[in-house]
Image 1 (tube, rainbow, N blue to C red):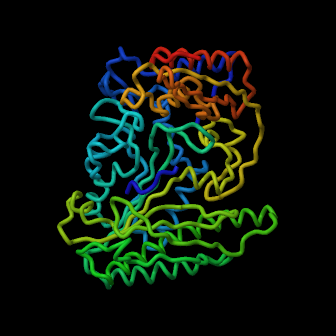
Image 2: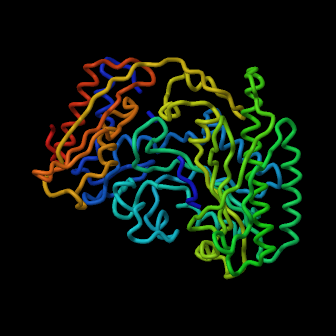
Image 3: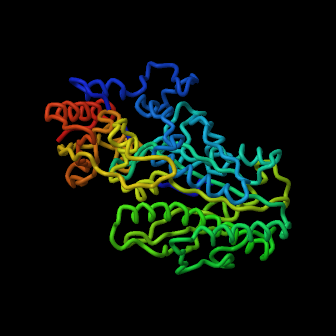
Length: 469
């Protein structure tokens, strides 16, 4: 339901960085066609901003690998939810290129929504893009339910967003969303399904008890109101089923982690798992909530969820007032990094067997670092072109990130803005970014880093006409 945001790339040879540069070079303005997942698309010089390095990720399928942390987590959630009553149809193979209608218009995104901007989204052309959320497929999934024996669906997929560069952000990540439906007014079925879910939740707490320290009421007339077409009992039962379903999910994945800690004989293994429900707001659900888990001394947001808005169901072809249900969305990478103790998101994308052989299906184990290679810091400071301050032409930070990412790939650990000021005499703006070059797999030489930095500076000058300080 677009409810979550949650929230990685090597070749060993004499000059791996230079080979990677050739792979990562931007799609040429002279190129008329782009091939993604075997399908060719026309390019548009005013819209196309996807790079070859990003396109190279579209066939990785990490969420399909049940021996990869992302795939293990997806598999655990799917199995647990379908172990109760087997009503969820899994969708794990949707292609990453979608239309702007699927990604934005079908979900009610206004024309001026920032998510549509080229600074946030990878466009193939004016009409096609790399999906920014799994919700791009939900209309199709809701339509499928109308002719299926299933009463719900689960979507897992890789999604793409231009973003900052650090240990927890990457331009490709994975989302999972799900939905569960009932006929409007069918309280008997809803009550029976709730009893089954409550029994499953109780049985899942054999070693670690779930403890709710704070709940959010099903309905808050002022801050979390219900939809007018549903009665209070319908909302309360739907929300109860939603909460028990997600509590079961939390219990399953964190119990797997706790079992692993016990096997490792870690001190102070939790005997209870505290969680809380928080009121929230999302465009496609009302009322809406978030579930948070107390883990290692802090509250972790696990996912957003709520009662599906009728407008969403109507757009998928359901008759007015005919259907009710709930939906949730979560980021698989962020949760996997926490449970598997992975310190850098780039590791999720490594081809290094020292990483992959540490994991096995349906098991959550802590990642054991196999090396720590030193980083190399470089700063780049520049003046923006005159007349760009406050104008649409001003460089977006994601544009800087994209040049660094496209040049250095996973040889860059982080990029941070460390200085920004406007000269009062000239009214020119200066920016300074600090780039930490660091490989997860090998030492990189100063010569390699200098070459990468030179390439970054050259591309900044060529594309944005900056003046290096």
